[in-house]
Every structure is written in structure tokens, then in C-alpha cells.
Length: 365
Image 1 (cartoon, rainbow, N blue to C red):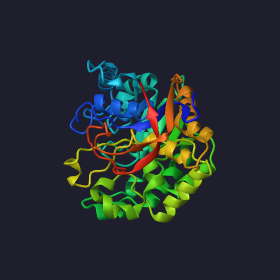
Image 2: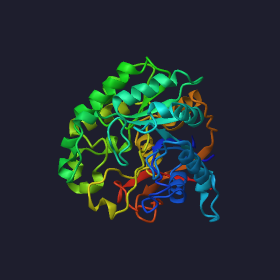
Image 3: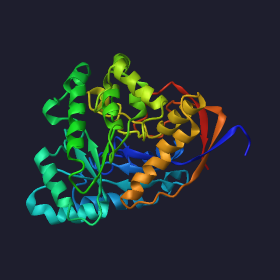
């Protein structure tokens, strides 16, 4: 292999929203998987806030059927991307009358998403019902992976204009929810994971803990609250972009190679949808190029790059019963990747990195 080329494992994205079924004008599996594939990602965990929500067996089976269908378009290399569908704990499926149904579902799906506060899709589950479900999980032979959206519902308000979003979902809402998860994590039969940690303060808490995994996003490493002046509605996400100090703290931990996993929380909305401050921004195609750029710029090592994008997420998935085959991709270290509308494969056709250029070009056949 020429010295100008870099050999890496294909990536795992622990957190995507491909929006199908029910929200196909934002994204669909064909466009989402193609964006993932061309961005170097071969496995994704798809979140359950679709329409219908993935909180019952029929909805989960429908999503599996959709994810496994092959598209006739020969150019859609995204067919190679594996989609693992998470199921949601909700107010409905945590009722005692649905206990057996929930346990059967979790036993098969193996991955559960818990929205501790409402986000896009309004699937928040109360703390009491969450604990009730966790008590039931003790009857399962194998612990499920439980992915927490960690924000304290009591501290969260809806957003009507982008300027209010950060104050309506304050940093303390994230820190409180992280503490709540830590207080209960060892009491129940589950593999706990906190996703999209948005702050250096939150990451610092988790660095002191054992028997829990967590991730952050390139969005929180690269951007902060001051960028909202240019992003406006497009920068609205849950949790919000944090202060310069919190972003710099988080980025320092990244540079120190202390953050165990990096995911995208790919949450595309159409440009028209973003005329109001609906939460979410795309990122599955940008995830690996961002990390490669950081490596080529000397910020992180190649070993750490491989750990956060493949080895660490693969190890967590193996614990709950998923074996992720290691595949290989090549990167032209001398090339560049410019984020523009012709490069963006997501149906939404926008990116917070639009107009930026990453070092390195991912090569996929």
C-alpha cells in the first residue's frame, strides 16, 4: 500500500435517525445508508422515534424488514450498511399489562433507548416507569444495552425561538440526568450507555465511573453556543450546543484521548422543517471524515481514532449479542473532502460543516 494511503476499519455509528418509516421527507433508509457508507460507516444503531415509534414488536419487525430490503439502484452501495434497530421505553409499553410483551421485545431487540426528557418524537418515559421496566429486566437471561438520552425532564422546556433553546435545556439538566443514571446503574440488569454527552462537565463526571459507556459527537467538539448566531435554527439540537468553556473542556478531553466513543446523532430534518427550531442536525457522513481530519492534523493518534470509531463500540455491541465484522477502508491522506451539496448524500441536503474542508479522502468501492 502506498505511504499516501491509510488503512482503517470501517466505522460504527452508535446513534442515527434514518426517519423511516413515517418521516421519509426528512430522510429514508436508502439515502441514510448511502450517506453512512460513503462516510466510511458500515454499522449504525437506528433510534426508535419514527412513525410509528418502535416500542412494540410489530413496529420493530417493520423496521427490520425495511432495513434489510435491497434497493435496485446499483449505485446505492449503502446496501452494505448494517442497521440495528433500537426499541424505546415509553409510557405505553412500561404499563404492567404489557410486561410480557416488553420483555419479549427487549429480549429480541437487545438495545433499548430511554428518553429521560422529550426530544423529537416526544417519547419521554417517566422515571418511575423507567425503574419499573428495569426491575422487570432482571427476569431476562442477558442484559440489554440501554442507551440514555440524559436530560432531566423537570428542567426542560419547549423552544419557540432558537435564542431560547439553550436556556430551556440548561447544562444542569444534563448533569442531573447523568447523576440519576449513575445512581441506579448498578442496581439493575442492564448495560448502561449515555449518548451525546454535550459538555466537558458531563464528560468529567463519567470519566470517574466504571461499568458505564458513553459517547459524544463531533458537533459538540467542533461547535459551541457562539456558533448559534450563524446556525440559528439549523444549530438547534438536544442537548444544545454549550458554552465556549464547556466545548473547549470537552475538546481537551478528546485531545487527551479520554473520550471512549464518538457517534453522530445523525438527525436530519428538511430545510423547510428547519424554518422552525425543531431539534436535530445531520452528521453520519461527516463523522468519520471529521475524525480522520483530526488524526491527520496531529490532534489524535491512529490507534485512538480506530478505538472510538470501531473497537470500543464493537466491544459494547458484542456484550449485548451483536458481532460486528471488521471490514477495511482506505483513506488517501493527500486528498481532501469538501462538504458541499454534491457530496452530501443525506436527503436533507445540508450540514453544519457545509463549506468546510477535511483533510483526507475516504475511498470506497
